[in-house]
Image (cartoon, rainbow, N blue to C red; front, side, top):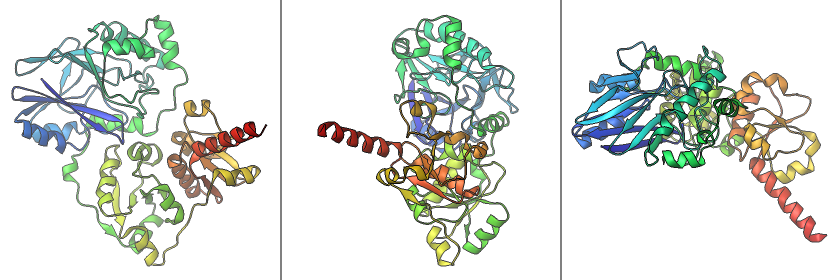
Length: 455
């Protein structure tokens, strides 16, 4: 059996094409499915199954479109409650690709319907979000079960099923580092059962109670779009092939739609956004985890207008938004910010300051740290208010307006997004720290070294 992995860095998402003697299965497909159809054609195989290890929360799957275009059967765990025709599988069911077999294991915990898929040649297990490399799936995504209840299921799935597989069995998860479905996922995109027993904190020998305590401690807040994407996947998303090309909007027409409630997403790098942008627009750069942050920060009901630095970025931006279920993109500003300025439309800027400049004006700012808890635990600028970017939309009232707000993250990407969001929500004086905490830490380290040498 041949295994092909497809990795989307934007969502830290891995999907797979398994093929054998003229037949194939796609596991956990992304929403844009042409890549699987094209590769199956190149291999001369027919896609027989589209297998979802669970109903994904962090992205919208293309299972319905892929099945419609290939005649494949969709496969899901029997507890998924899917609203479209599918094969509901249970523990120890077997799926056939030619003469090869795929064994289904029910592995609930991340979700109640989660399954893993075991192959013999090669010896491999496709674990979805149950077992990551270096981590396990977060056990807090089901409204009907408490995190402790789900963690107990996850313990059983790991220690009484997956970890009983041979040590040489390869592990292929649905996500890598940066995914919002885990906390400490490795940068590695595959591993083995043996390696996970040695290196994954959740796979080491422990009691069920110890496991529950570890995996439920300090769970990050769930992104708002997770519940929405689960329901989209339960019903099946509309086909991307039915979408019409995006229209170019004149600045006057774009301004009219903005006044009527459309939100502008500026996909340029933060330094370009800072120098000039449409007032009230949000900066979520294509140069980072654009889709995940868009899903976390954008209200689903609002129309979206794009600002891109070049025309080729328009369809890429739209595609990446569609992967998290943001489909109300109504157009893009013709000629981007230059076209907007050329029509004498108002332009705003975002002040920026260096780490050295911050030292000189340290007491002038409310400093807002938008990094994750684990990052803050390693160090922060003294006196900072900590609100992770993914939670900022409903914590704006915690940010005082008595001083200018200086926003920082690790290196600047998330801070630019946060600063633009604050400005769009009425914060009149917002500043971005150039280079983020990394720049601050490097500067203070250099100063300490000089002081030590001088003494």
